[in-house]
Image (tube, rainbow over all chains, first blue to last red; front, side):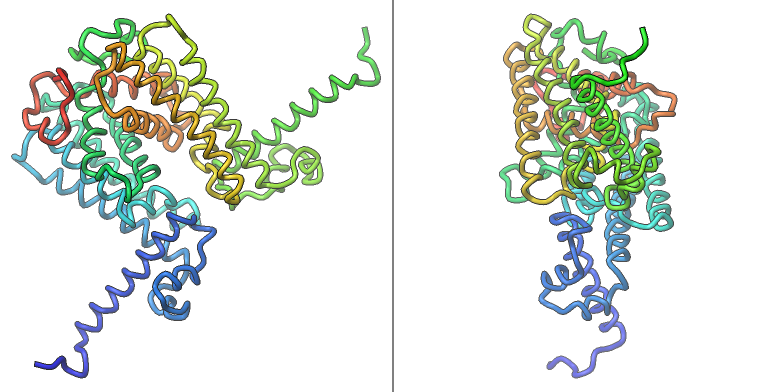
Length: 222
Length: 222
């Protein structure tokens, strides 16, 4: 059957959404690679082989694009943490946290998550920054909640959940800064080893006797 | 004895160096707080209660200021890692790494180190960026060297030294992003607990049986 000459309303809307996402994705890559201030909408258009007026058909401004890129990155982290939370009966708190952290590493090395980490909301006007920061606060809360569940079910050593959430977010977000997608180590393997440092610790049993002095020994570990 | 009416050459040079550092420091704070692109040299002058022409007496441009701020931040990390390396007989590799990481946390929460992490060299022209990245590479090498020494002397579990260096740098650099100097936890305490996560691990012995599957168990830990 030949394709009909006129598209339905639903088809047109879906196509428009796909094209808008392609614009946002090309911009996210350009922002991450060249920096937000050094990227013009002409650069983004060039990456898509279209003209700047075509870009304006999908977005109003460079600021709107960055807002959307950061929002999508944050939404992905939020939905990853929501699924980790919802995973009742799916293992102890630590296991769920490991699933979440692995997903976190994947997200921050993809186009929108990378743009969230490397560019972020800082270049945007105060009012829009506020909206994105509220979303960040919500995600932070979920992260801490999962850590607290792990402490409560005995899979994670008692600790300051805020500090642990930030330490893991820092270690994993940093991957976006140094990871070369053409490099030899796949993201999942980088995540596995990075998370392993936190979960198992890097010290060898019995070695480094002086270290509780410096590094705050927790409960029974080492 | 009254102060002499004319300063010596040495006094004039020292005073000039101090004033130049005050300019750089005020700019580093402004860049970290407001962003590089949103900060004008008028803003910096205002913070120092001087006029913009006074600023130009010490630096040529906003780019030169950022270059210097990032360079000073990197020099501090470099000298911290050089002292950790030189600390022969000062404990095992892990102990020396803990000293270095603690110093790292202090540096990235001070004016120049904070500017290094929050702003960095990205807004600068390609040529100057290159110079700063070479310095970064040198510091990375020292970090990895210390980790490898720790593995060799048996204080650190065998691991990918590059991944561990990045994971710790990420966790500690992240402090610059969220730490509130007016907050209740002092930086040294944040560093102690953050480093403790890495050194001792967060898992409770025997808990989370499924986790070697996800998180890469090392050697004998857990």
